[in-house]
Length: 314
Image 1: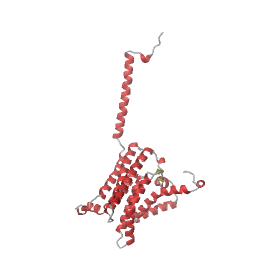
Image 2: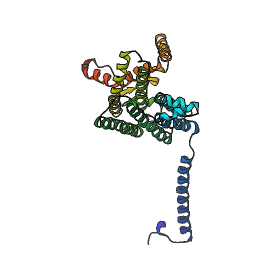
Image 3: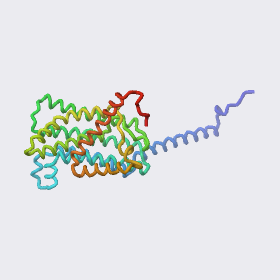
Image 4: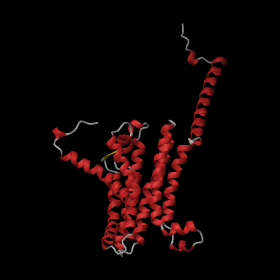
């Protein structure tokens, strides 16, 4: 007696069941495609708006830095002000972009709406504000300075700026593929974060501009301003290499400012805030440089410390 295989049976009922299964599979695939398209069309408004504010500030910083002196003849007071203080305002716009960059992550985690779309958009905005804009402002400052540079040196400085932009893009691409959602994964960074690198460049420019502005009758300040100007390409190259390095940098807010702290730490943070109000250019410049050097100095101290004296991992 031959056995009956229902999978090879041919009949109206079997054909209808097969067609029904194919229809359900097609409907499931169509629903998934529509779901993906709807996911891209619908974004969380406030975090994405803050991220776009970051990108707009970076673009505005480049626009303001490129204002021609003819803007001083404009009838608009705002245009004259930005043309007169173009490089200073461009540096402040970098810090405004940093503020938006901090807000968008906080909004996403506060509303529990951290998505891959938001992470990709944040990195694209960071490339503009902390990759392209700081290098462009630095080149504009050097180009507008009274220092006479040879053609070869000018091209070398441009190449350093291009290296900075490339390393910022590489840093953010590496962050995208290794990033994990959740506050517990953001207590340290592998390599100097791009906002810290851009902030260090912007603060250094503010400090140099203030020295140059106050150097009337002060030979020492005039010399320091020129030294800072010549050191700016070196700082660009150092920030570029630190961004793609494997040096660990702490997240200052998540590691040192959250939770309970002693009264002395509270007073120290208050004193630092007052110093920022009194002399913000120098405090920001020296503070961001200290954070940038924190990583390599800590790495060197760990390498030089005997193995038996290494502290336990956190």
